[in-house]
Amino acid sequence: MTYDMKVKRSLILAAVLAAAFAAGSANALLGQDRAARIREVYSPDAAAQIEAVVEEARRNGVPVAPLYDKALEGAAKRVSAARVMPALREYSGRMQRAQGLLGGTREVAWVVAGADALLKGVAGEALSSIGQDAGARTPVALMVMGDLMEAGVPAERAMEVMREALVRTTGEEGLLDVTPALHRMVRDGALATDAAGRMLRAMRDGVSLRQMRDAAPGRLDTSVRPVPQGSDPTRDRPPV
Image 1 (cartoon, helix red, strand yellow):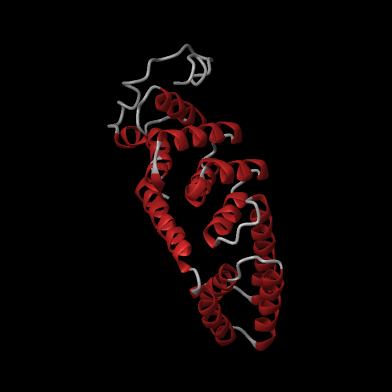
Image 2 (cartoon, rainbow, N blue to C red):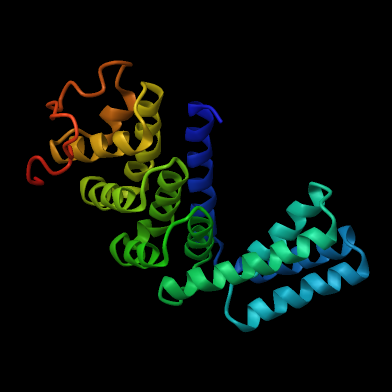
């Protein structure tokens, strides 16, 4: 996936998450529409199995619209029902776990983003911490945390970057600069873990994520003093 595609993906996913926030009372009607579509594209037996998974999730308080969407995505890709069912059960369980880690929220965007973050390797403790610290920005923060982990940033460093970004930015747009800033540095030759460390130091030196994102090749660290080889660039000076 190219840099531009990754940026586009982040923006699209953020828009989807925002739309999920606005869904509100429309969810019940959407669920009915999705259920009807399930019966159209699956055999009666497979549709009944899908409904059983959905009903169990509903009883547990887990949002069901994403489960319908997952099943419909499988049908669109011509995935067999035999493969869709275990994936659906796993997704339901992952959403339930994310929901618990996020304080039992019923917000679809939070639960979906949490489930996606778990899939990308974000630990439960980190998920809960972000849910407590990020407030209304939690879905996008979880998405970005997952992107950092997926890019190969170690969990502890990814969490440091996320915490700093939450302090240094406002709104979802600010957080959305994290991933392209990281990939910008990687495209210039840095390993993901080193890029994350440089981002962290730069933020603490007052460099914005947008500046890092838009920096010309070879000029990513003009505002950041070099440090000796082998040292930790995030700890050679105290945070601002």
